[in-house]
Image (cartoon, rainbow, N blue to C red):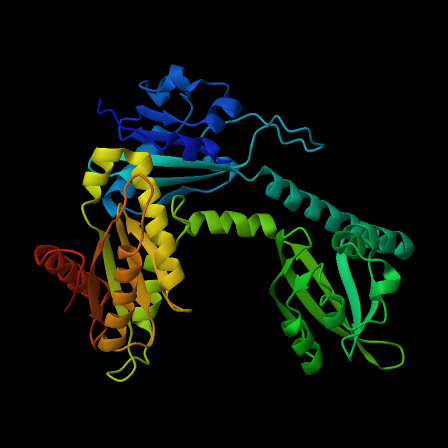
Length: 427
């Protein structure tokens, strides 16, 4: 078995389960979350076959997903349905739910394709599942108690984030759940305009879409986000519904459903865990959508940059993988601080990064690439010192596909490497 130094500190710090296995199901890594929640110590399972500990896994399905992940070099997923379990992990959290085992979302990502290694990430989405069950239960209760209006109102008031707004976007009523969630008193909310309520320094909330829907007297639904006084960011599904009062005046209900857990899970699925940039899967999705747009022409096009950290293998061999990871993190941060608003930056894999540049010609794309090159060149990384990167640039032309653009950019990068590194080439 090849000995690999894993970024133990980073993986152990994650609040998700992480194991690294090969295509024969031999366990190469088992992080602290897995130890705590499965009661299986890493020292007992590393080097052993997963089948010896979890014989009930459908290994045909797992093998197929591992092969697909390695072949496509892109993540595959288990869904969270009861019919498609990965492993059963008992819940230790005290809860009123009858859910005895964690509800899991499992992602299988390429880790080391040459060694046929994949990283299995396990997310506990039990709370989200419980929230769904709770919401379903509440809706069933509301339906059953429809004839008992007063009791319905008490249930809604205590559990749902709802406000009633007039045509001037002033709050007429607010449920107790809404007031408690945002930390307001009724007298500070009722009679105030929505923008005034959330203009308070304690809550940052974009209310423009809601007020626009009210101004147009139309039903609207969409996602909105707020940042609370403790800097916590929360997401909501918001539904604006118009209705007529008895005096024929228009009023509106706005129902907020907290979807923060769902958003966090979505973010994990599109984010590179080391650099916090978009991952390869998300980049491919954006790239494909951009190529398929029909309004590109010779005067209105976009660019692609591939960047590769020079002599990165030497850094890993000399200083170790943890220092190598630190270099990648600092390079990613330098790139993030340098790109323009609207540019799409991702980690392609290993020491390679990719960036899509909307609305640029060749000259502008080269200008952005030069700024990125200088940003890396100016880094002074502790224990390593100076590093550089090489860049390949290309511009979309009629008939291009994602594959053809990647090929040209990759060829440009190869030319930059051949011509001395720390430079930019364009094809």
